[in-house]
Length: 247
Ligand code: PGA
Image 1 (cartoon, rainbow, N blue to C red):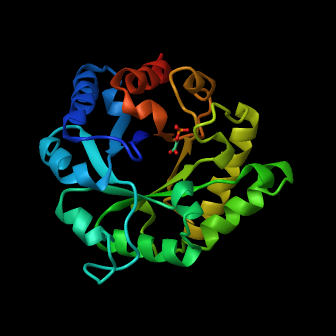
Image 2: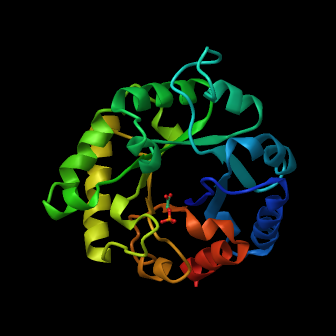
């Protein structure tokens, strides 16, 4: 099963649901629909509304983040996994580079993962190296640390998906070569295998994925899907990614 996950970031108002309705219409008729899952992570403000609409449909709604405490607390503007689950979220991203750069530490990410799984959200855990780390050759080491500092064998790996997003690729139009990417994904899977032994989580790629760049990834069997930012805000661009991937 492949994943196409759209991360809307700070985008969307209630009527933006029309974008998702078009994606859902495409999905219903797509001959390849049994091969993949579509998940969208709108901002917090839209999760309840969109989850209700798509409850018995094929698009899954998730959150872009969650707070590192369970249930309720006195932290202004914080939203917990418990609260997200209660309004219909099925997934949550954790550790997106936007949030790491705003201060999310490994300790916080560990708690976020713990409480998300406890509250029955599936976790899309994001990792990735920055430009400097890539240049000095420490990519594989950085990724390994990001994995082992947060994940451990006690977690239920069937509820975890990894999204590899090189920071230098997010929103820049730059993508890794398929050789580079293959090597990195194989490395991530090897590390995951060491942590979990069996049931190794799916590994997605994210960073400037669009209808064009996806063509260079389709022969990489190691990639289990994509985390899509900019191109997920347009139904046409998002559908083009799926179409071109299976063409
Ligand atoms: P992008 O963003 O597709 O716009 O590069 C990806 C992401 O940040 O998840």
